Image (cartoon, rainbow, N blue to C red):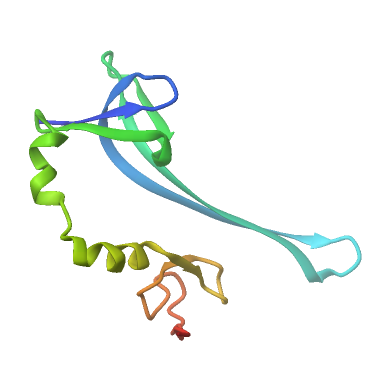
Length: 126
């Protein structure tokens, strides 16, 4: 069976083939400092591979997609299994917060103690 996703902008439905995560970092010499003070640019690109009814494969941003069906079942069938007790809702929101690694500027979950990108140990201030 398949996972059916809805493209929010166009309203079209696609079959989800998989997800990918693109990241890049570009460095070029600056005008004044040359290689001593280079200009750096970096970004992260979360994307998903989908196909339409004709089998045409496309890459779409994951924040533009919404899951509609999983293995032929609507999401309402899974709602009880996915619900969070009320006392854990506040804890869940805290864990969804992200922080930026000071070394590599990678997005890290609030509750992680180590950056998955560069391995830097993070200190959580409370």
